[in-house]
Image 1 (spheres, rainbow over the protein chains, first blue to last red):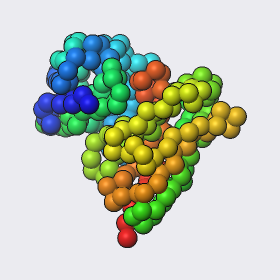
Image 2 (cartoon, rainbow over the protein chains, first blue to last red):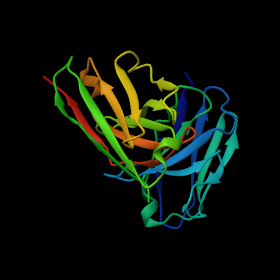
Image 3 (cartoon, rainbow over the protein chains, first blue to last red):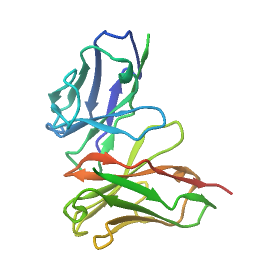
Length: 107
Length: 117
């Protein structure tokens, strides 16, 4: 089973600043990597798939990059609605695996 | 618009069984694979199971293999998760999600399963 790790566990950012979240896979997952956002009390929402393709309706301030084992989610200018937990997920192999999440909170 | 509504959660004793349902609407249910994902209280997401659009292939997390069974009824636009031999560690909010291949592009709001004596 592929193991996914995310760093940092918590990221404190001021509104308007840039946030950079990292995700690492224990073996190559090619570009089969998705990112999800989850706000308190809500279901997760798909942000990015294919490592860098934004899902329908996702603002351009969200961008993804990377391939193989190292991936990054960047939020270019944090808005108040972006404070949430972000999960990466590999879908290159079964079983599907989520990372432990990065919580982005207000500095 | 895509809607996924889970039901069937509740309180069950260890060793007991429960069947979850997920009613789908707003898309061609029989054309898409479907997932179950769970989230223990205060914890992260754990993928549980997947079933292909026609039910021909099913995949499970090791933690539930042999105890949980995913199934679907395309005539009723409904996804199921039969959970047997439940353990305390199965306590979680269970989400169903529509699959765009192995990406989970729409999620329901979840149904809570509590395993406790």
